[in-house]
Length: 189
Image (cartoon, rainbow, N blue to C red):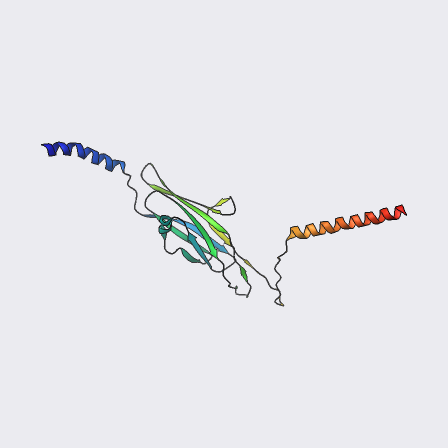
């Protein structure tokens, strides 16, 4: 009799505990899209301080991107993962023998898996360049090419227009001061 009474008290508690535990769908995936401009291929790495976030990355954490690619994040329960995505600078040249300047930007990707009321999971991916506040839908590295003229001389523009304008303004100001001083000197004679 005691066992049956005990079972009557324990059984409702066990059923209630099972009903309160959410059951989520099977494993699903969400992607962080990567685009690369200015090169045929690029090596891109995803990293995180959170080991659980890194283990959610499906496949390698370093990939070779041919113009477009993606990191795939796997999930089967609510989660909140943050990643840093960078491009590895290489020393490759393009088909014309021109040097490629690799984009050194770092991107932050926030992958948030939300539990809906119906038990389903909804992924959200927000990406932004670490040095900027604007958010985007993907990671976009913009590599540039150092152009060389027919003599092989570097013709890429490494100048800084602000310094050049400041130097020109200073020279004009100095010229005006010299002319004003000479005119004043002639009038006093």
